[in-house]
Amino acid sequence: MTTVPTRAPQRAAASKADGPGHRRKVTRSKERPNWLAGLTSILWLAIVFVPIYWIVITSFKSQSRYYQENPFAPPSEPTLANYRLVIESDFVQYFINSVIVTVGAVVPAVLVSFMAAYAIVRGGRSRLLRWTNSLFLMGLAIPLQATIIPIYLIIIQLGLYDSLMALILPSIAFHIPLSVLVLSNFIRDVPKELFDSMRIDGATEGGMLWRLAFPLTRPAVVTVTIYNALQIWNGFLLPLILTQSPDKRTLPLALWSFQGQYSINVPAVLASVVLTTLPILFLYVVGRRQLLSGLTVGFGK
Image (cartoon, rainbow, N blue to C red):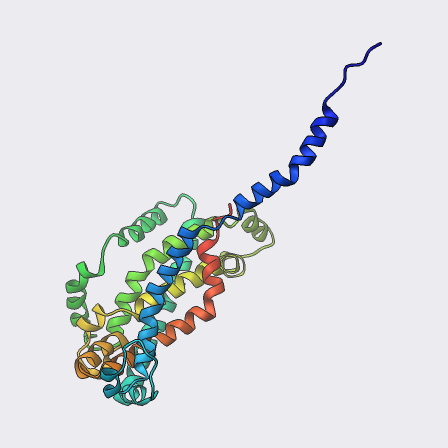
């Protein structure tokens, strides 16, 4: 009885012999650097970093040194005179006004938006809540510039012109629609079974709102809070139209006045820019983890 020779050992030996080389080829192809992406990243980093570097180093130069030295060279004689000049020009008052307007608008806007989003999601098929949600979505299509004249007339009729409350109320109204849209999408991702189990345990709607929905959607709440704070902190149109007194200015409007007051003293203007940016940078450092988790949640699903 003759046996047919098989080539399995030969194929195994060949694959064993060719395997390391084959694996090396695959590994080399996978480890091939993407030069185009690397160069693009370096170019983008330079575009972002160079203006920031120039602003920071220029703010430590004196006015005379600014015109004598290379604009991109570090200051040969660093000085804090520009920061001292800006702080002495009522910068603290402008900073306090910006904090009052930002906190006074962000906190009510986020609270109202969170409760409205919870009611819209948990309200089921209520016609009133559907109309309310549609009204919020319509608010996204109305830009601030298109309503600045009606807002100006309403603020005058209410007797709030040239006050910080004239900045807080419109800011709350214009930041609720987007906040409701974002928070309602996050609350919909909370499993319905969790609400049902808490309902069986005797929890009220308020208890489920703050003890279940709020902890599970905290990244979204932080994301909305930081986004709204950035928009209100950098707002320029409302302070320009609705305030007049110098003691009611916010930081963006104060920067504009610094530019007019120190039109030649460029280092002083840039020092005010640095001082204005520091609170926003601090807010990002504190809430960056929650912000990133709120922005990236759902991408892995």
